[in-house]
Length: 413
Image (cartoon, rainbow, N blue to C red; front, side, top):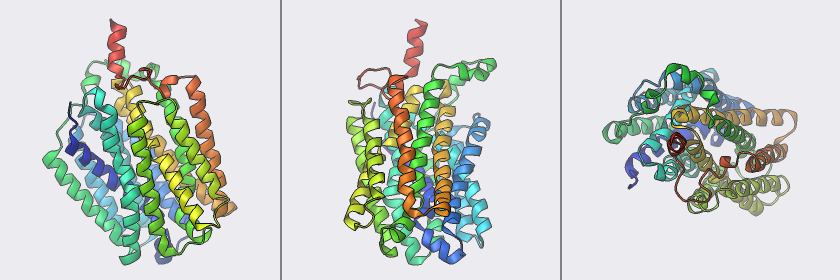
C-alpha cells in the first residue's frame, strides 16, 4: 500500500502547531518575564499548567468523545485550540494566560490521543510505523523550526504576535482537514465487545507492557523537561551566551533532533532491541557533560546537538511501540495513556525545574535531569529482560510490523 502522504502530513501539521504552542513559553521566557513582570518559575508554570490540563482531561475527554466521528472531533479540537491561543495573544494579565493555557492543554491532549490512531487507520498494518513516524514528525519539526522561529518573532515584534500567528495556522489547518482528510471508522473494535468486557480491559494481556512503556515515557520526558524548560535561562545565565543568541541555539538544537528521526527510520526495524537504550545513553552523557562544560561555548553547542540528536527519535519509538503493543480495542485509550505520560513528564519537569531554581540554581539542572534520564534507561534495560516486547515486539527481527489482530486470529485458530 502506498502511504497517503498528504493526509499524514496534514495530521503532522496539526501536531506541529500544537507542540510549538505548548513549548513556546520556553523560547519567549525573557520577553514574558520583562513584559509581565513575572519570574522564570512562573513562566515554567505556563508549561506545567498546559501539561497538567492534558494529564487531567485527556482520558475522560477521550472516553466521552468516543462516539464522535474522528474527523469531526479533530475539527472541534482545533477550534478550541485556536481560541485558546488567541486568548494567550490578547491576555492582559498573567491569570488570563494561565486560564488560556489550561483550555489549550485540554484540547491538545485529546488531539494527540486522536491523531496517532487516525494515522494508523489510514494505512495497512505493515506501514504503521512509517505512518506514525510521518504523523508525529510534526513534533520534531516544531522543535526544529516552530519554537526557534516563534522565538525570533517574539524577539522582533513581541511574544503576542507569535501566539496570534499560531492561531491563524490552526485555522488554516482546520480548513485543509475539511477539504482533504478522509474520514476513518474508529468504532469497529468496540462493536465486537459487549459492555461488560470493556470494564474488564485491564485484564487484557497487552495492558501490562503498555503501562510499562508509559512509565518509561514519564521518566524520560521528566528528565528532559526538567532541564529543557529553562534552557533559554541556562544558555544566558550559565553558559554566558547573549540573549539574542537564544533563538539560534534553539534552532541548532531542534535541527539536530531530525538526526534521531532519520536514525530510527533507517535502523529501527533492524535493531529494535538495542536502539532505544543506546539513544537514551547518548542523551544522558550529553546532558551530564553540559554540567561541567558550560564555560566553553563550542562544547555547549556540540553537547546540545548530541542531546537533541540522540533524543530526536525516542518519541517516535515510543509512539510506534504503543500502537504495536495495544490490542485494537485499546488503541485509542492507549494513545490517551501515552499522551498523559508525556505530559506528566513535561509538566512535572517544568515544575521540578522551577523547584531546582528556587532551592539550588540553574547550574543544578543538568545533574537532576541526567539522574531522571538514568532512571528511565534503567527501566528500559529491565524491560529488555522482562517483557521483551516492550522494545522488540513479537516479530524477532522481521521488518513487518506486528499487528495485534494477527495474534488474536492465531490464538483463535
